[in-house]
Image (cartoon, rainbow, N blue to C red):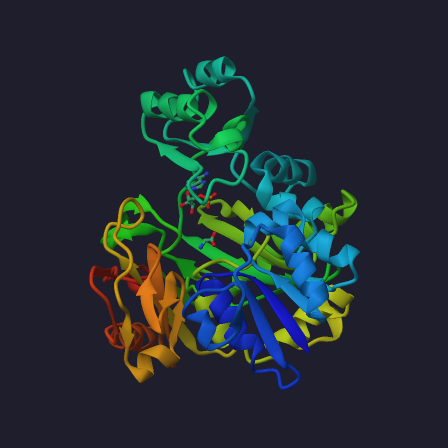
Length: 421
Ligand code: AMP
Ligand code: GLY
């Protein structure tokens, strides 16, 4: 089969490595891919949101199956456009990707169908939002409605901070039109769990649970990032919690999307908080998480391409989705200064062992040399019998990835090691 993967980060590298294990795969094109992905796929310089060019490329190259990984092309209708031309895809159509594309849509869906989430109010008028904040419980959480590169959520510890966030979004347009509407919601507490799931719109098969580490600094300090590391499985996701999530969240969400005429096929990501009152949905993503994918897929024992095709064809009920009971840890190596200001263009060297266990996120090839080109540069994943071993091995191998300015958090997995203690 000739495959096309839309996207060019560490997540896409992990997806491509996993797809390659299927012996029917002849070639994988990555659009645009990156300098590291080029070792595993044919990279083509077409951007992930250049939908017309993606469709034209797929037709010219007789692509058999396309995997659309990032949120923006999904929300923009990349799957719709490819399917219209007869190219089957993994990923939701735009009318289902809205579950991530609009937080207002997601919140209203959960309210309508009784899916547990934080209490909230929606505002499209700034003065109404500001006066609501005069009496709202503090801390409070302000969310821009639309996509905002993972930065559209502000946790405000004071009324003034909350009002500043509202003004920044609605008057200052710091997230563009994404902030024209906002959600103000209840502040919840508890450990966070990411659960990615495969769904064909009929059944839902959760993948192994994981834990992201979103803050830039050790001990969850500093700014929010795209994610500085992950571990799987997440020890806070006990069998009891998993059972409740299936009954109270996963199945009702699939049913709700069907009832709305927005059948979701692809990877549905549940961002959960395990509160003292039970699991709550913090967010939905319409795609694989990054860097969750870099720990989840290395634990997948079944064939990824077979599962993806089953999601597209509606045969997931008859398809094996099996995960190993080992542990995985992924440590991101970033450019110092990420997520604010950082230098790029430094040569990257990797030991053979590190390269074999590293997914490349932000690098480009220049005259055959791999140079840093982004904030998050690589993710190094180890799989082991225990979490402790996986963490130790991931750090040991990540040391084999070197470039000027390299920065890693030193405590990926620490919180998970403390679970139950
Ligand atoms: P999101 O982009 O929706 O995942 O939000 C980013 C982060 O903000 C989440 O991973 C949580 O840590 C935090 N967050 C979002 N909503 C809430 C909430 N209602 N209560 C507490 N923390 C939240
Ligand atoms: N790691 C969180 C996300 O992919 O949104």
